[in-house]
Structure formats: C-alpha cells, structure tokens
Amino acid sequence: MENIKANLYPCAHCGETGTCNNGPNNKSCSSCIKRNELKGNDHSGLLCGSCGGIGMAEPMTERINKRTKPLLAMGIVFFVLFIVFAFAFTKNENFSEVLVFASTLIGSITGYYFSSNSMK
Ligand SMILES: [Zn+2]
Ligand SMILES: [Zn+2]
Image (cartoon, rainbow, N blue to C red; front, side, top):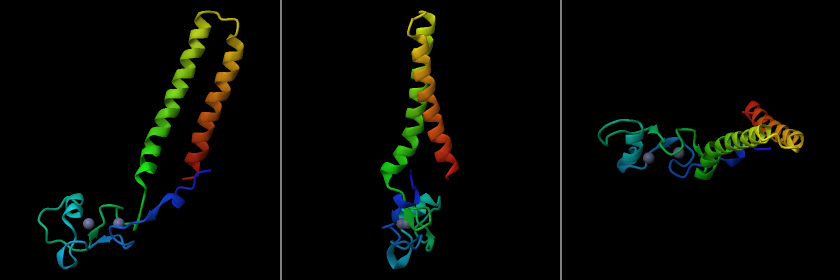
C-alpha cells in the first residue's frame, strides 16, 4: 500500500550527494555544521543536515504522517474500547453488535499496522 521509498525526493540542499558544500569555498554551511554538532565554520564534507547524508529527503508531510497516524490509530482503538465498555456497563441490548463492530475495526487497524511494519 505505502511505498516509503517512492515518497523520497532528491535532496535539494546537497544535490543528492549527501554531503553539504553550500558554505563558502565548498565548505559545509553553518546549519549543517550545527546539525553535526560541530563548532566553528571551517568544516567541509559534512553530512547533509537536510537528508542525513543519504541524498534523498523525506517530505515534511510524510514525517508528520508517520508520527500522527499511529497516534490516530491508538486514539481510535482506545475510543472504540471506551464505547465497548460503556455499552457493557449500561448492559445495552446492542452490545453484541457493538462488540462485533469494535473487534472488526480494531482488528483491521492493528492488522494494517502489523502488515505495514513488516514491509519496512
Ligand atoms: Zn541532502
Ligand atoms: Zn548544509
């Protein structure tokens, strides 16, 4: 479903080399020096801080998706569990239907994450 590599784009900062030479005299720029936790501005051939030296970078939205999607899934699972408990405690006559619905939903959510995790 999700091809993570297809979402990478060539890093514009280092021109796909993975090495930053955007500073004066082909030295590394100050932001990459900072990212490499170095002091001064006399460093060259540092790892590109934008892509981490692989020459390809992730779009920012992709990073946000990766963080929020599992959180969202967790939220849904807890919300559904809460509804199931609410129905159980109130001895609602539709409890069995809710239980079927909830287990299907939780099953598909966890199944989705297990299958996408194993692809990495
Ligand atoms: Zn780069
Ligand atoms: Zn740089």
